[in-house]
Image 1: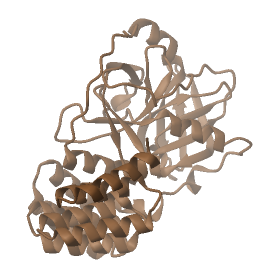
Image 2: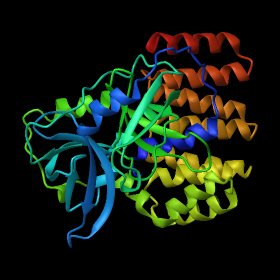
Image 3: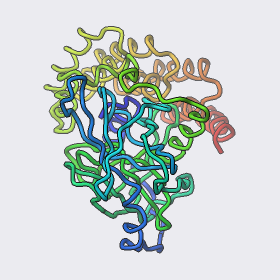
Length: 371
């Protein structure tokens, strides 16, 4: 699954291992009623290449009666054509793309159809950990598959982008499935999972899907072939990327280092490759090498606080170079004075260095920016 922001989020989640506070949630989900209401609006997507050969399947859900359908960007990324199959067997050709958001792994498609059932978009911002949810998708092409679970955590990715961690299964083919609350409102879009762990399933908050609808007002469908990933995301199609990610999930950091060295040689201008190289060196306690790799990542993307400056500063700390770590976070603040994350990281460095007055000032700045 190819969205770079979300992939990096998953890497950060495993690396940070930050526990979430569980809130009580007593609302129950009437699964029978929800399935009866939602399944007609959830479709199996069959994606084909220019030769008509099937290359992928996924799930999408209708958000309007005239055939607007939300799914994951990676589902249609290499598509020349696609067909949506409804629960009742109806087939609807995909007319084209109305709007896309590769960073958050979302795309809004237009089907050649009218008078279709559709789902209502809700809000995810007030979801508490422990809230019960349900997912309807097409794992392995088995359309209309219902699973239930809870919101197990709310996570942050780069640039303060949020992701929902859920216990409901997100298997291959479930990409693009609606994650619904007890009222049947869509609160997220199932996107990806991490191997090597239990219940490590993630969904994009529905607000990003709502943003696509707003972006698509007045738009005409564009051919699927015209939709391409950003240059930075293309690394995700490389076999060594997937091999490196598999090694990471197994804690095989020697193999991860081997693969990321290949990626850096192949993509010298891709900051993600350098970021992963820094991680591999760091896990193997080669701190000076990790610092050098993170410095290159920062050079390629100076405004990346979470996956650039934070990782570089942390590498300096692990190398016992606390003054250098503080200097790094100070530089991050100078470049990103409106970033609560940058101020928070600087405050943490000050605190660990025993500079409590400076830490308090930095944390207060962070709180002012993000109460």
